Amino acid sequence: MPCCRTIPLFLAVLWFAAGYDCQAQQRGAIATKAMVVTAHPEASRVGREILRNGGNAADAMVAVHFALAVVYPNAGNIGGGGFMIWRSMKGECSALDFREKAPRRAWRDMFLDSAGNPVPSLSLEGALAAGVPGSVDGMIQAHKRYGTMKWRTLLEPAIALAQRGFPITAKQAADLNEFHSRLAKWNGTEQALTARSVWHQGDTLRQPDLAATLIRIRNNGRNGFYAGETARLIETAMKQHNGLIDKTDLAQYSSRWRTPLHGTYRNHTVISMPPPSSGGVALLQLLSMWERRATKDCTFHSADAVHLMVECERRVYADRAKWLGDPDAVRVPVRGLLHPAYCESRTYPIRMNRATPSSTVTFGNAIEFDTMPQQQPNRIDKMRRESEQTTHYSIVDGSGNAVSVTTTLNASYGSKLVVAGAGFLLNNEMDDFSAKPGSPNMYGLLGSEANAVAPGKRMLSSMTPTVVEKDGALKMVVGTPGGGTIITSVFQTILNVLDFGMTMQQAVEAKRFHHQWLPDWIYTEENSLDSATMLELSKRGHTFKQREPIGRVDAILVLPDGRLEAGADPRGDDTAAGLD
Ligand code: GLY
Image 1 (spheres, protein in one colour):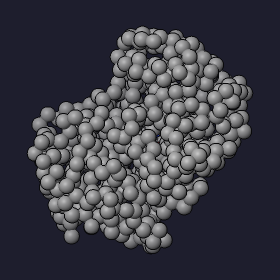
Image 2 (cartoon, rainbow, N blue to C red; image 1 turned 60 degrees about the vertical axis):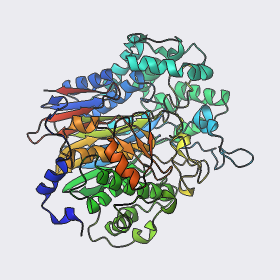
Image 3 (cartoon, rainbow, N blue to C red; image 1 turned 90 degrees about the vertical axis):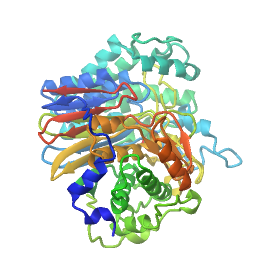
Image 4 (cartoon, protein in one colour; image 1 turned 180 degrees about the vertical axis):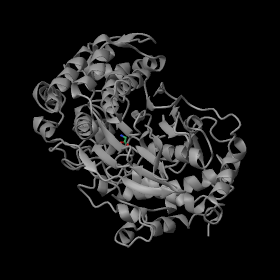
């Protein structure tokens, strides 16, 4: 029987917390009423103003989403998609899938050459790389169900930011400079993003074409994007660049309400995104496996902790590659993958003194467990050098409604193609399909038939917008960008708070590592693991690869006295805006 099941919880927490220096209880921004944390100061400010003016978390979400499409154009979007987890002040949860879809004329082998080999450039840049965007419909659906303010009002801040412009940050200037030639290749130098070849911090970015599109969305709602002038401009761009999306694809797009996944972890309930994101399934599997085997020696970044997390991760990502895909198109054995007996069967082959080579790890027989009765049912109500620029925002309003949203164009600036005259970037989400079973995508992630391209299908995601409850009350709102690393970053952030006793800000700032089954190495941020730990892990058979920063987690923690603590990731320009 694993140690953690036989010791009282408070002792376990004390043991785990001992591994982290809690002396300096450095907290993030604190607010008594409401909190917004996003990737950009302007977007956080917009969200706070909506809350200040009486809006709720859904109203703030809509305003923040459109503001990010303006002020954070490498990932904020109207030309992409995403996922939302909503938790009302009464504890009712829902999940909204506004993931992109393959166009009707897409086909299974569309990204293969005549010899049957993947041609990555086709799924990464240009019109063919784009899925039918879902963000605008997602915002409309969320607003219809939960919003209280007028739709028009929620669009105004984004329109003003696009029309008047805003001063870009130093990171944004560096980013625009890095991507200038690729953006100019597709769009020329007349677009807002390519108007200057060298950007500096403080330069004003104005986007008049984007403002005009946002005005159409403000005035006409769904038809401002999926019909009329915007649809015409998208179809024109597609024809010009040999893409597939047409007006019928746009007219037929709709987001889907799905039943969120519920799991338990050390007396907490964890609520996350079901397929077509792999995020919720994988996160709940990781927490379940870790809880079964973690001992008092598994302190923060200790060799035992890293080893156990990595061993769990390689098994979970092997499952992900085999079983996860669009549940509207393929059978995804979610119940089996989350069945306690299945998680137990995946956990116990782990040896604490030796790494299991990934070449010997394969997916489990989740189908067998899919129909098995559950004793403790889970409620089911480098990678290539492409940056992983999804974005995440977390919001809690004054009544206690919470929303966790992860949204993306996939790569930084998506397909790099701006819809001429409409001023927004199209995603390159088609790369999240498995172009050919067994061939890695941009993130080095493998997939199988479950995630093959098909007309109208949604591509598999790793996005993991998540809410954590304790004793039926809201405890944490969390999520991050980072492609395949999203799942392991959310996993680590939750453990940092619940097991290692960190504040929300410390949990977000803490260095991260990542393993995804294949390739078989532990990706580490610079200085993430100390040399003694790495030596011990090497002795157990692990190998390492240092890489650029992993994720940008934006999260909110409800403190015992009810105040809200933000965790805004310093890896980016991420900012918290609280309301007292
Ligand atoms: N495009 C990244 C993801 O959905 O996981």
